[in-house]
Amino acid sequence: MDHVSVNGGTLHPLEHQVLRKFREHEWTSSPLLVAISGGRDSVALGHILWRIQPLLKCDIAFAHVHHGETQNNQQEEFRRCARDFVDQWAQKLGIPYLTRSLDSKSVDAPLRSESQYRDFRYSQLMSLRDSWALNAKIVLAHHLEDQLETRLIQLIRGTGEQGLKGMSFENNRECIRPLLEISRFHLEAYLEEFSIDFLDDPSNKSVDPLRNWLRLEWLPLLEKKRPGALDSLARSLSNLLDGNKSEESALKFSDYILESRIHHPRFLELSRYDQRRVLARFMREQGFAEYGRSHIEEIIKRLDTSKKNHTFILLRRCWQVSPQWIEVSLDK
Image (tube, rainbow, N blue to C red; front, top):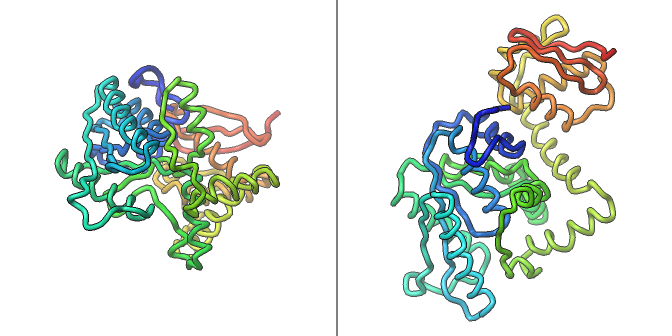
């Protein structure tokens, strides 16, 4: 974990997770235009990126898209408050702020559906990006539950494997989603820990859109009936896709697991996905019992350190890490 200073203090575990995601994808320090609606998820994303900006070493700006006038007084007030909120917050953090509003004269017909508003937001974000920095990437706040909801909607529509893939960290090298492996619960806890305010969009309480119905009714009932079901369901869908990937991507494990230990430099060169595969194979060969993906993720987290030599205890084993090897022995 990085122990250098960031904006406002030392690195938070959630910030470290996002930073690691950027490094995993070999980020090139392009400018980041962060889409901020004023809601919980985007505010958490904006604060995380502001804090780790010294480590990312890139320019950051906030972008807000106002959906224009509406006959709904409550929604009209929210849209005005959201625009002012993001403006004031950006000024407080010292971050450039760009905004664009829907002009009813510039569209052929009133926007009504969720998909129409989404397409409008995306087009405006692209326009704002081009006016700020042509090589900038647009950063979106989709998180773990958003990914699960997207995949469930695709399943309901009768999708194949391609549709089930859902969202990815980087899309067409234009949009980035660094929160896809982070749950709504952890984002809420992060905002509470830093005492950060955000706004609730009243339209999110409507169960008319299928996504909102899944989010507000079906998924909470499932979690209540079977605690932990949402995490298991999300993990199962990811595992299905990972299983298909493994058939397509041959990995010669003997290049990484040598004489009951892992070659550390070669392991570090692997993608996060292949690091999981190597660790899973290694743990099976070493006779580990009752381990899961959460344990593998924890091991990767422990290995992600600047220390040349260190040890840690996990699953009743002592992990010994040196610049050359990763080895395990029984914890005495």
